[in-house]
Amino acid sequence: MNPQSAAFLAGPLAVGLAAIGPGIGICMMTAAYFNSIARQPEVQGRLTAYYFITLGVVELLGLFGFVSFYMLFSKTY
Amino acid sequence: MASEAVHHWIVDLSGVPAPFNHVNMDTILMAWFTMALILVIALFIRQTLKVYPGKFQVFGESLFDFCRSITDTTAGRRGDQFLFYIGSLFIFIMTANLLGQMPLRFIQILTHYHGELVAPTGDFNTTCALGVLTLVMYFFFGIKAKGIKYFLHYLHPHPLFLPINLIEDITRPFSLMLRLYANILVGEILSGVALGIMPYVLPVGVIFLELFVAIIQAYIFAMLSSVYISLLSADEH
Image 1: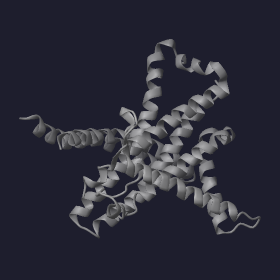
Image 2 (image 1 turned 180 degrees about the vertical axis):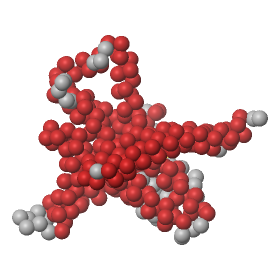
Image 3 (image 1 turned 30 degrees about the vertical axis):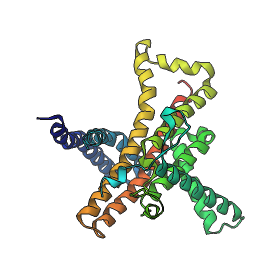
Image 4 (image 1 turned 90 degrees about the horizontal axis):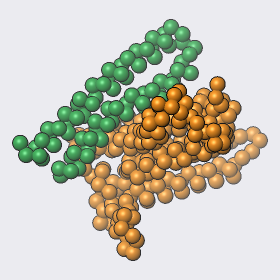
């Protein structure tokens, strides 16, 4: 296997594997967010700000995978 | 297509020393266009100020209130001293992200650059500058609030935590920078791919998603900057 075809395999694999963790994380976070709003609807305004902050923090891990994909592909082309 | 969105229009500047002689002209054009647009709108709103507000004044005041709610949820009344930074950060990033969704292809008629003018925040250099600016700002407000005692927070839970606290100063701006850059770049590539699959239909859905992402990312960037500044300029409990 030459390095170029290895990079072609590794790029999509990096995106897919990096998406697993943030997927689980965002699922758990959103479930907790909806549960707490269903239990106490009046906290929605305060929770939304913290929800989006945490969304940004969790989502970053998935984007690391994308950036490694992008770097691999810009090297191979 | 997909690769068009990420190819920059690079201009060679002769007579400038080596690392600085290549310039991403599309990013610079879009950043200046964004700043000019914000300046014109702000000056226009300032002209219309009255005691009984018109619709432009209501728009400006609601934008100001939104920026103030960002600093208010993180720092309370103390947040008013860095409201100028958080507000301009939010408005600049939001305008830049939204301008990236416009189909600005006219530039390829005038020049040899074949591609679309994307958002300036879709370039690594712009977001790097914004991240470093946040680093400078939280150093500035931390030292302003605590004086030389600001540097004691590196030893805060225990002196053994010194390397972790030092690394945190690098990872904070780096994560801010990478989050904004990667989100906008993913949007541009995704709309390019959607254009390739089904023109005129599929990009509409992607662009609606991107309008949402543009505002959310500007909010997250401003919110996290505000959290860092308020965290590091707060008094010890």
